[in-house]
Length: 270
Image (cartoon, rainbow, N blue to C red; front, side):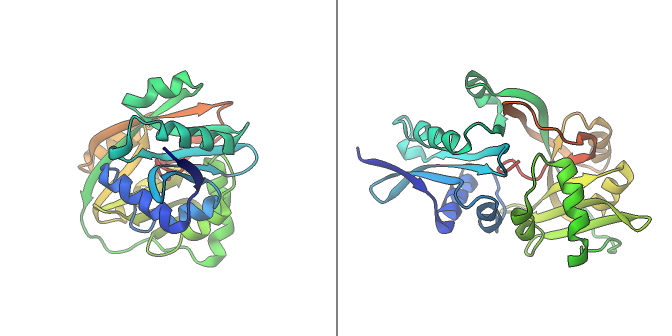
């Protein structure tokens, strides 16, 4: 078997996202471009001949932090070492950085055996919100620095290249302001089924609630389980619990202001 491992093109990242959709992961309709922008050299595939048989993302955000996601071997090629081959390449790409991932229950013991330590559980919450008059604004270019500051408080590393795409259509971003200062922001991205909100970063429960209730339609949001009051609020709004994952890190867990994290950005990129 002649297996090769190489960096994926933008079109091949889209192909990997199509695999994720087939697995039931419900990726965004336009995830490939912002994902690629986060680290153009951080997506790898195993190929037999010209056919991709496994893939993974290993985004190096800076010299200290990276994130693993989109780890998939095509069902027709499982059990032949292709997944392990892309995993090893991804981990080599991230080197000595602290590495994060969101592990599903059946893989957590496997990740633990490779040095990953669980830090918190994330719960997929899904619900349908009614149409309401718009009362929040989309951010203008002048807000970008404030959004970056809030994002940096709540995410382990700078990610300016990613944010430039993540804040742009077809995704819809909202900011919440109190006293002229941004104290919350969120991005809603259209998915194969409904939309996902992520991130949802806010300094107060009030700001997070106002951002959420400015939405309508079917919404999915991945919530850290320690946000118990927020989870109760979501339940009162008709949201229901779905699957869970665990945020796990290899290396020293990064420092973030977790009380402001009401919804993570994505399971694929952290």
